[in-house]
Length: 375
Image (cartoon, one colour):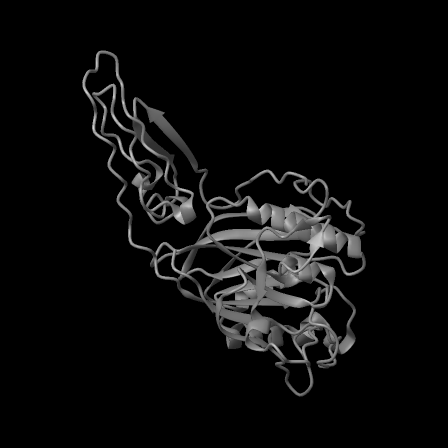
């Protein structure tokens, strides 16, 4: 699997070093952004969650300290070691456990994925200038905390920026920088702060702009961000993508690469994947993402839940690509997917908003609201 080297497009450069010296476990932080105890999920249990303790400094026969409480998901505690400095004598005491901070209550968060149709297309009565106000309406009507767009050109994003208050966005174009289509992520800036964000390409060279090697002729990208709720310190990742519309091989390799990147995220906060996957619910790609099939002989290490199906398991009128006609037949190819097979999904919908038979896009937006688990 190709390696995606981390890059920082927002926030600061943070590095953590665990230093065990003479039985003293120390966590050093160099972070210019948010250094509060809850800013990073790996440290959600407090700094002492990394080490069992430092007692036993003076002794040569002290017992190892027990693992500190509060490490995130079992990843935090590293047992303290008995100290034996030169000249020490006598038995040291066992290290004391770290003190855990109380868990952060899981927030209620609303997500929307929306392919807004590229604004340069010659769509006649459905061209961008004649329907952009309807796109603005969708933003206002849904009032989501996070909105993942596909097919957006920079000029479309700039018009949304001016028309819709309260959001900021992350992401670059698939041709690199400002060029080509974006998979931008809009977020409620009064509620959330972005700590890290980046874009990578769905190819064998994911850090190379505009690269293609999976069978797709057009570049395909994933834009992601790690966001922290300002009021609580709760952290979560949002991944937004647009898989290829022609090549099944590209879609399968894209899904495998995406989940490989997600699995390597640090810290291990909760995550959401959303986007136009150009694959119906019976496609191998969707089965893989949900943990029900293998790609390349491998399972998805982090199976996900389709938030729409959690609320509407038997709905049949689920088509999301309708060519400006408003039809609901066909496949659902747009998704809001949540980490884990069991989630508290409060609501989910396919938004059929239109004005007199005129639609905001050739895709319906798909919306999901979740009560995320405590952190």
